[in-house]
Length: 413
Image 1 (cartoon, rainbow, N blue to C red):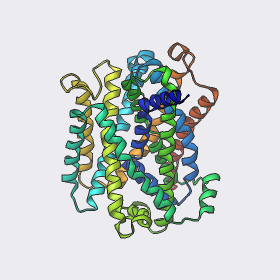
Image 2 (image 1 turned 180 degrees about the vertical axis):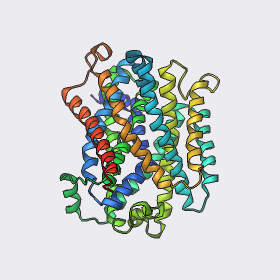
Image 3 (image 1 turned 90 degrees about the vertical axis):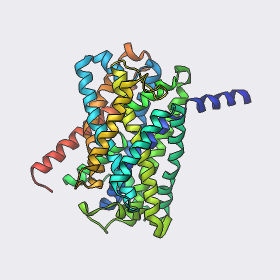
Image 4 (image 1 turned 30 degrees about the vertical axis):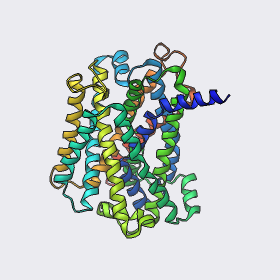
């Protein structure tokens, strides 16, 4: 029995990583900023959204991991094989728009974090881009994975900050259990951004690609599933407490477009006091650096697998030129957007998350179509509960997008 238990533990440790890394990278610069702004502007009103989408996030991530394990193919490759080139280009075009916007958000996070120390974005962003590029191009998958895992530790500061802020826990509980929806375009837009930063298009492609790259097999899938579930829970516990921390400390002190990184940093004041800006800057830099490497990787993985080019960070540049070429282009694009003059860093980050939320239904529909095909998944197709939950998420996001656009057209403010 002892040997059996040890073997199970070793099997779990062997496959753990893709789910937790993908979820941790989800709490990136745009995520931290969006959750903080949600708390600063609407206090606890969006906590119920976090709770609901945690379950949907776990389902969607599990679907990707399951498709990767069963088919040993990435999402992009499956779309090409089952829907043809035209639909593949449509799906990948959707992903590219979302990924490039989010990559720009990561470099905006790097710029915002170091500007709190007086470092110009014109120095910090190019320097960070070079470090990220070298980390991935010159490292191996295991090296990159260990670095990413190590960088996730700082997220715990937000949980501590949320508790130490001493919020009114009865208000928190009420906001968590009783939905409160504001019909104003500003609230709807931010709600879309919250969903879009929690369940992003790139996560699905990246997770499935890394599961395949790691070689996880069906016999070990139950361990991979727990990796995904743990990752989803971890990331949204952090998200939940970011909103609480900002709602308890920043709410009522700032309005709309006036929000800056310095304002958001005050959410960590209960933990760090006058050093709140330093702790926030370190945490934001960490989150931005992590995701600024993962996002371009997701783009490169998806395009190269879809068209049958050599992929994987374990290969040399000369062995996978298209993979590294796409990776490099994505980084350069993100850097260029942030270095454009007169660009508000906070707004860049929030807009990117909203774009992800608006485009997410496209990817979800492709996933649902694929995972319910017995010729693709055999006996590992979706359950009815999974299908209802994920279809509902896609429909709700489309409805919210239409409501937001309608509110803008009607001038509801």
